Image 1 (cartoon, rainbow, N blue to C red):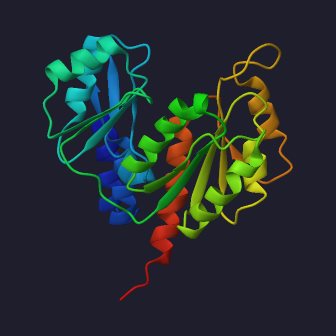
Image 2 (tube, helix red, strand yellow):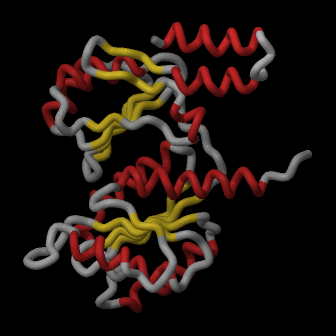
Length: 261
């Protein structure tokens, strides 16, 4: 199917129906690598969207995960693997040999790479309401760093004692962050507060912390969706999505600030 599609695109180029640039863009949409019957890797996601393809380890056998990661490590790449179990970590460390392998125990993420991170100049801030929100925030941190951003952290800012936030928030803005991820469970109030105080986009990250009615992050999610401040909200515990979205904003801001020579 892929060969036929590429042939069709090249035929259109030959008939001058589309330009070479248009053909290149269409071909990139078709590029993926099949791994037996278990997976298809999007080889050009990062080039196409600016966001790398992360591998979710959750639900995969250790063997299948190792096979997918090994097949993904072609050329100068870095692979981000999220929600990694202890058994999967052992399998990957036993079978994958790369110059760069970085394990984040709190986030349960593993980065396997054949090349160093390429810095973009983007800067992301990450704030948590409480200490229990840190694991999800760390997943956001890893995602943003893998997309080339510098990350500044404020952990355990709290909403019940909001006075703790103000000094650090001022320093965060002075450092020139382009976007801020705010992770909060329970009532999920903090993103609304931060979004009303800062001049940059805020991404609300609800965390499955809390109990009783509205527990497991549901109250936090609904609170953020009902925010009277303007902010973007991702799904419960979606640390990768929040970090990648913030990094995308930061990288576009960094690219726009570079003046042509």
